[in-house]
Image (tube, rainbow, N blue to C red; front, side, top):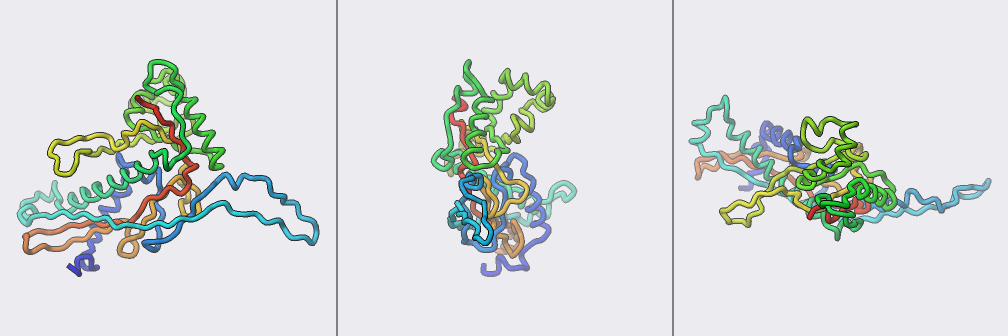
Length: 317
């Protein structure tokens, strides 16, 4: 067991499949809302930002000859992150390997892709628990009327109020809106939005969903599914993982994510085996006459500037 994660068992081909799958996104949106920042150690510190401080003009920058410049103060604090290691494995029976039609089926590749998906889903759900929590994203207000209400709906007004709050609180221009699928389904039917979209974007007619950008914000409609049944319960309860009745407006650093860059949230990831986002190991279980494929990832998800987000609560009833 001590040699399970040895370099000999690290399979580069399967690891590349796993890394491609991690980057693939698909229905998962965690990387679009909390970019990955690589960290060198399992436990460390990160900046907690108060972005509006950068916009303050109450410092006198005028300097007289032979005088010292006035001092400014920094407004961020720090917190401690602790990466956790997550891993899953799949056993491939020798009989399955022997009988696989390799032109169609690759049991080992299929195993690592399934493992990767099952590692990505908890990342998504952990991020949901933080970003859609009004106790974490304390900037929030109820929609003027639920977006599926019969009257009084003002989607653009709700979004404008959210954008204004982020600007004033964090000192950055929000660039992202997260609309859960059931809310997006009613938002795209809003008469005002359809009136605006038909002159600017034809994708609503082609794809049937909201356009890629709405009121200056990148539209994120998270489609990951999750079985919400309790462990051991045979009856499934499949629903969208992002089934919250709130809409998130946020600023996300996309160009150069780092611990020094303000953003709503980050995934702090410590590379496994020295340099890998996710590592795939392959080894034998002779007692069970099977090949074991195992995937590992080490990370944590942290909100680094709550003021970069605003929750429009009660957007659906």
